[in-house]
Length: 451
Image (tube, rainbow, N blue to C red; front, side, top):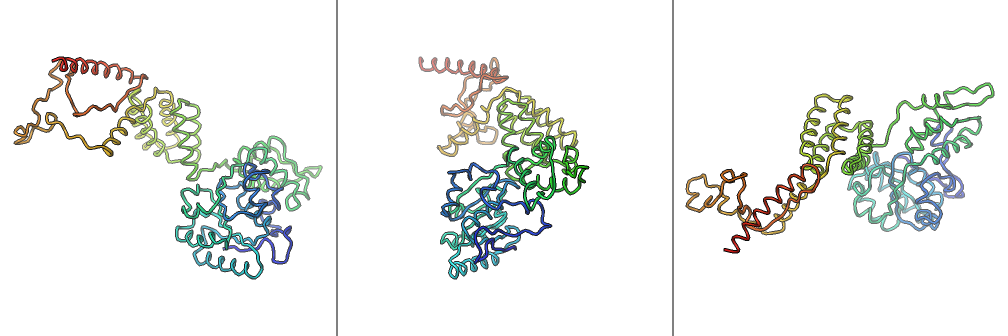
């Protein structure tokens, strides 16, 4: 557990936490005011909700949700500075119920003795279990503490509903290229950064940093720090960061791919295939493979897609994807990427139909909501002893005894229509066949009505 007050009880609000000289660059150049904060204009721009709430000092609890390196911790510290509050930091990984209760008690004392508010910042709040989160509720509700929680996971799934309802949720976005470039410039010009050096980042190196760091300010500052520390000044005493230096400062491009990345990417992957865009589908496949997604999971989703979204419009899709699912298990990476790409491009470009999927869901809905239809007697099992005495199987017409292996016969007892094939791919042939059979049924119905 780490605890500190950003502002001492008798110090002005301009003073911020002092960072030791050997701290990482990202810590040394943290913004000291909202004006220095880079990014998140959708919540911090002039007139935006969070900006108004902080400047008016009118908020209770806040949850900051976003990928790593987008400024969640810095923003929490700035909120404390702006509101002249004590800033207490806990970690969702290491903090216990005892730690939480201790800081709540200290907040009560601070308020009664000094009239000063306390911001309790919980980093990785999603790691607190339900009991730990429950401990926060009474004092969040009473205003004893102002909770600021930070998480890289969607709070809707990891924070208890009672705490969610008492908090304002803000989603932070990855920094764009312009904002990453501003982060680089600020580090170069910052007194605690490289203001004392003559550092120049050439255009190609800057572009590379923007690309490889995926909107993560901490990542780009770490790479910049390595680049500066490992580069000797040239004859003009300039520390020149060119493309070669930049590339050598980042071993491998990493992408943000936690639980949210997993679900969001597979969603985009499925929707791209459903939308018949093979290029987008292959792109999301590549992202999943690069991030180390389980290839068996991808293959299983392809099999489901082949049935759910391609269906009988192209029955070969289920055969292909099932074969790919078995093959990737045996072959593994990196060759499995070829099989997966074949299945993905096939499914994306195949004719689409979800008629079978819609049919079973509609039938299940009827089973759940309506009275279950008894099996007509002529369809019941007539093979066991005594079945015929009950009338089971009586009047059943064996279709193969009739021309075209079809005979008009009632198979359910009530009028139902679940399967509605589309006019696409092979399912258009199925549709023609069903329409023909329906026409025969209609002729038979008319004949019965007319006697």
